[in-house]
Length: 77
Image: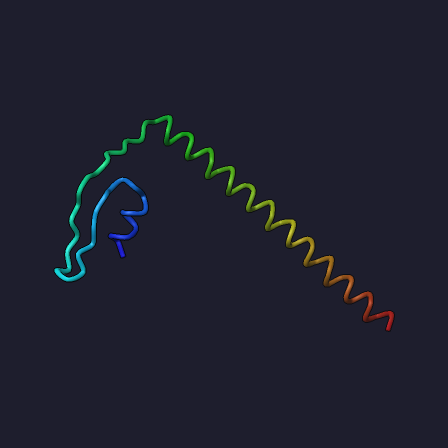
């Protein structure tokens, strides 16, 4: 499965030879991350993490509200 993952990145061009159970690489592209790239990636991942924490908190509040509403409805019945 590693072969497919590498091919999806488009950093490697290759053909899978199933008959000979081999991979023929036709070209590769070198990718270098600068400090700015790492900083941007860090900011993006931090933002995603913070957003997910916020969503998790909101879903928790909704779940609590639904449980409370169900209790109140049950008590009224």
